[in-house]
Length: 198
Image 1 (cartoon, rainbow, N blue to C red):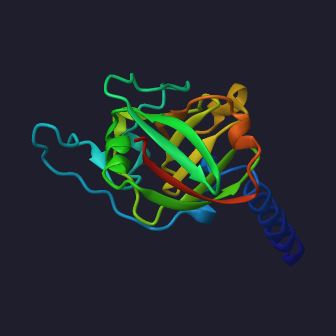
Image 2 (image 1 turned 180 degrees about the vertical axis):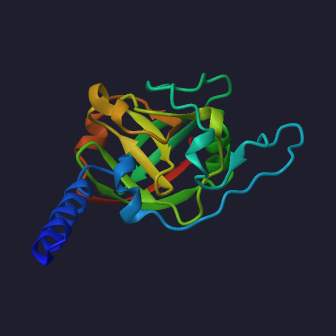
């Protein structure tokens, strides 16, 4: 292949990767550029613990049911009320009873610095949440709080629900309660603390 063709291909690929980086943390297409290497782990479960399918990081997608192509919220049988605090702003939220949500609850209060993108605030978690493969789906509902497997992202989604089915590897862990303007009006970078609602 001529050198000019190789050079042009490299430039186009670089531009594509840079453009996708602005889309948001929930994009499975950004995984190649941003995901940190990690290994899946499973173990036998005792009553009340995570199922054997629960892992601490993304594993091979071959075992995930990709026919589940719609946003879903796990039924809130045992909801946990929490607050999301950014400076003086306190936002009420509810976490569900999924493996991932229970893992997050065990770490509360939990503080993470998030960046704003076109449809979410997100950041990669240095210590990923456990998850159950049965909870993995595509898309979201605006107001969802998700763990996105592409690069172990903690993400708060506030836009683009209608076109979100293109984004795989979502595990819903909760939702914002109240108007989404509470999230949309925040600055580009936020330091957010998740805590139990007293």
